[in-house]
Structure formats: structure tokens, C-alpha cells
Length: 410
Image (cartoon, rainbow, N blue to C red; front, side):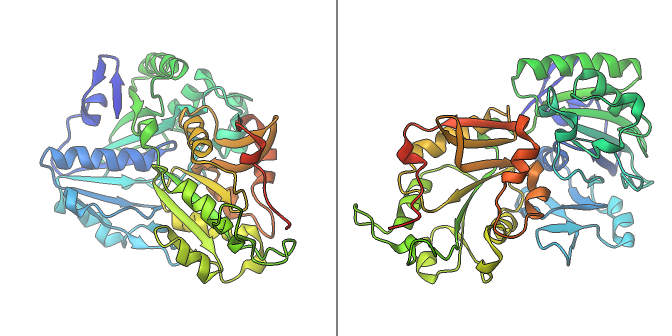
């Protein structure tokens, strides 16, 4: 984690935001581009300093990992309609949390994991007893098409609309009483996330803190998750019926004596990633992948989109998803690592392996495309999403055609 403000590099989020926390502080985090990351990183920091901390939400958030062992309580309710999400606790519980902890951190907004947002009519949901409101913005959006990286871009006021995200658009969104400052309670701060060591983002951050300072807004910037720590879930789609192959091709024994599915399993196993998930309808395949998180697809007839959705649910709060088909026996660990490294550089939200400039499998999607992926239906993958966001696509050339060749027939 790296943090800066106008005084230079800082050692803590509290110091970077220039805050003196009151007794029993209630902090609401809004905006986009790293709210959950900020809440959890801040909670760990405060707990390490001896503070009792509670994390909660007034809207929805992806189901978090348990943190009791780090001295942090999470007080939320299950969302009956979304098993991968949690929602706000009952109103009475939320109001009384202040008395139970030194600091209450509230995720008080939603953004579908896009780096920027314009709030809707009922957003954000900031409790009246909030002492500090922090608005987060993800600077991975800089230089990208506004419609690709701003949640509710179509609702931006005409006076501030722009085809591309630049410092001018950012400061107008963040300083607006209808945008970043909407519904603010208590002291207000801005945190510019996803800066890393990228020169363009660092320059944008420094300029933004100067401009926002004119409006009396104190700003910090940095990277809450280092590139090597980004949580990538690998999702193997192994539920197809192999109709063109004539038999279950995943169990077809290749020239090297292994069933076809074993080749992709062996290539994925050495990867240092957040989760390794396989979605299948076959008990035999599940048995070969006992060290993976296995999800059984009971409706493979609904097409590849069904496997993708099941994989996304199993991926939880991953930051990105690598979708792999399982009929590419020539795909190597090195090719997968090359794809992951290209994504970690943060220049694109969609990264695909390619051969001679043509897009092939596998592909990595940033979590900001999660809602779009969950809306897919039938036997279609993410191609329509890619077609709609071509400027956010990076092709990574394979070393050989064998790496990307899929086997459809005997």
C-alpha cells in the first residue's frame, strides 16, 4: 500500500487524509474505485493501532472474508437475493454500532465496481450520525472513454460531460454537490485510488489535489492494493457436452497419456492467484480437480453463460476473473502468467491472449464488468461486452499457435 498527500508519502490512511478521529468515530465511504479496499485496509490499520473497529454497510457490498482474527467485527445482513452479497443490518443495530467500537467504517454507496460514478437519486446512503465522509475515485479511469469507466455516465449533467476522463472531468465530479459531495455529513475528504507508480496518474493526483484545495477539499492519493496483490480468480469452464467431439473430450487421453482436462489443470496449478475455480457437470472431472474450488453446473443446457455466472459467484470479492476453456491442451503456465502480468500493469480492464493479432482464449475481465457478465444468457461468452468496450481491451500475443489452439473434434 502506498499513500501520499501534499506533504509527501504517508504511513497511514488516517495521516494521509489529515484526520483526527473523534471518540467513537463513524466514517462513511462513498464513490467508486476502491471503497471496499479502503474500508478493509483502514480497518486493519486501526485495529493494529489498538482500536476496536466495526465494518458495516448501508447499501450492499460483496460478501467479505472474516476478520475477527484481526480485531475487526463485520456487522451486516445476508442478501437473500444475492448469495455473493451482504446488505445493511436492521436500522436499530446500525444506529447503535457507534457505542460498540472506537471506529465504525460504513460502505455507504454502490458503483458496480467501476472506477468512477455519478450518484443516482437515492444515493449515497450516508447516516446522519456520520462524523467523516470520504469519497473514493479510481484513477485507472484517466484517459479512458467516460461511458466505459463512469457508472451512470449517461446521467452526468450536460455542463460537465466529456467523452474522455481527464482531470477537468474528475474535479467537476468530485467537487459537485450533486456528485462526490452529495449528501455529505461531517468532515469531507477525497481519496484518489489506483495511482500505483503510474506517472500519468501521479500527475493527475497532484493536479487534482491543487484544484480541489481551492474548494477547501483535502485530498490523499495512492494504491490500496499493490499490482502483485490484485485478487485474480481463475475460472475453468468445464461443463460442455462436447457434441462435436463425439464423446467427453475433457477425459480424452492425449498423446502424453493425460486426459485433456489434466493439461489445463496442470498449467493453472502453479499460478499464484486468489482463487482457482472449476465449473463442471462431471464427477470425473471434479475428482481430478480436488484441489480447486469445484462448482457443479446442474444446468449445462443453459449454455456457457451459466458456467460463467456460477464461476463469478464462487469468485466472491475477486478484483478480476480469468476465464479459461478446457480444450486448449497446449496452453502453458508461462502463457497464463504473461496474461496476468499484462493485466496487473493496469492499462486495460480486459486482457486477452491472441495469435497474430486475433483475439483468442483465455481472457481476463476486471471486476467492474461483473454486472455485465452476470447479465449474459445462453451459449454466449463475453464477446458482446468486449465489442462494447474495445478501447479497454489489450491483446497479449501468444508464443505459438499451439498455446491457443482448441480441440473440437477427434
